[in-house]
Image (cartoon, rainbow, N blue to C red; front, side):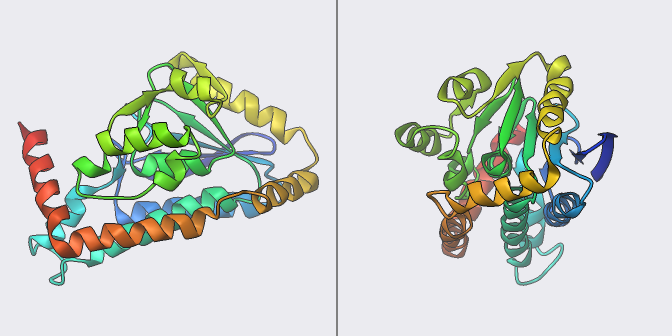
Length: 256
C-alpha cells in the first residue's frame, strides 16, 4: 500500500498509487506522490513517467474520513490540520505532475474523481479504460476545487454543468473532446499507456525536457495560481460549517 515506482523499460518510470479500497489518499499519500513524481522527473535516465493506480478506480480524491476523524477529536484538537494538510498535499501533487521535467502519461481505470481530476488534468496525456469515468463530486462532499483541472479536460460550459451537478463524464466523451488520447479495454490499459510512453521516450531526452518547459511556458492558464484561488473557497466552506454539514450527510448516505 502506498506509492511505488518501477522501470519496466529503458527511459520509462511507472509511478503506481495503491491506497485500498478506493484510492482516496490520506494527507501523507499526496505528499508521497508529489515527491515520487518529482524524483522520477529529475532522473536523467527517465524520459517519460506513467502514472497508474491499483484497484477498481484510479483515484477517489481526498480521504474524507481522515478529516472527519480529526474534527471529532480523535486526532488534532484544532480540527483543521488534516484539512490544511490535504489542501497542501493536493497542491503539491498536482504541481508535481504539471511541473515534472518529462512528459507524464496518466493511465486511468474506473473512477477518477476529485483529486484524481487534478492529477490527470495536469498530465501531458491520458489513456483510459472503457469503464473510466471522470468528475468532481465536490459539492456533494462539502468541498470545492479542481475546476481548474476539469476545465483542461472539457469545454467551459460542460465543466460548469459537471461541477454544479456532480455528474461524471465517460472516457469516450472525453476522447471526443480530445482530452483523452486513447480509450481501450481495461485489460489493455497498461500496454496502451506504456506504448505511448515508449513512443515519447524514444525522443532525445534533453530535447523532451526543453519541450515540456516550453509547452508549460505558453500555457494560457497558470494552474498553480488558479487552483490556489479555488482552495481559498474550500477553506471558507469549512470555517463556515457548511462543509461539515454536507460531509456528514454524504457519510450517512454512503453508509446506507
